[in-house]
Length: 413
Ligand code: EPU
Image (cartoon, rainbow, N blue to C red; front, side):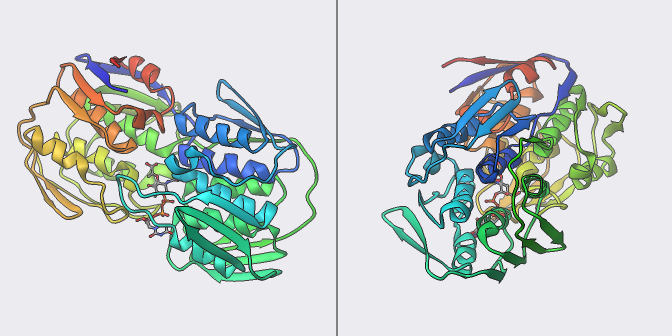
């Protein structure tokens, strides 16, 4: 889908933040482990959620999605090889591996491929499954996991820190009597999954990088869970306001954005924490030095979006991407638009310059797409963004939310 962005001279209004994409996907997968129906609240209507619902239906679940409520009834869930196209397109569906290992002690799924932001191997996940007594074989792009040894108590350490491998190991180990998983990496979304798993009857304890679990009998019950606010969506709208107008961003969790928010405050941007939310006003800030690192440090998902804000400042900024090997596309767009950026591998020095916004840009991943929305708003002219579908994968109700603050997005194909 290609869209035309038409940003008026003034961006002004209120934006309410939706549930976190990177929480709801593992949560939906984890709902298969509940004994009873599950009602999720604050669910973002994004295409990654609708694709996950499709897969849950294909394996026998009943899924009802209305407004921001989503009900999963897994009564008729059946084992099936997960050889669905959605599993190739959407990496987050690999959380079904952990769930299937707990439920069925086996799993067959398309190997999640690399993507524009990097190769994204899943070796840390596979090593953890092997340490739990499973055998993992990849043949013709299909990953087949079967039980090799029956173990009762697991004590493993992840071979490297990974958000996805942490969540997948937490899910995969729930059929064992107990586990200890060390060297884990929990961001707020993973912590939300643990909160949900506790509600449905799996006692999981976290101390630093060690996660422990000890099985207890599980009762049938109806579970409700409210998804945490999306910290990346929160920061994205805050930056739009700082760049272009005045926005009150509501429904945020301040703890989850502490580091990037302080960075902006220290750089001198106009940010006020109010009872209702965070109010930001168009302002200029000092140059920033940003290095992406796991939570609670600076999130990789905000790197390109901050890059656009830095390009509009007088002072130079330096940004280093440490998590993904290929997440620097936005700087080429900025260079093509007249900004003086010096890219050396995964480090960029942004020296500003006079920006000459192009007629069109092309998104190559979700966050790059949001960064392009920011570029499109710098001047008051109409800009085309190609491949806008990427943005719809992770930003809830984006057409209406942008319209509400004076940015009009028209689908042109
Ligand atoms: N890695 C490996 N082997 C593995 C797993 C990861 O080498 O087995 C590498 C990755 O290639 C990457 C680094 O380790 O270079 C970190 O990967 P990690 O597993 O921590 O991240 P992820 O689970 O793949 C999730 C989010 C990302 C977000 C990162 C960091 C989902 C579906 N994805 O990725 O979200 O950037 O954590 O917070 O939850 C996005 O929302 O746009 C997005 C990319």
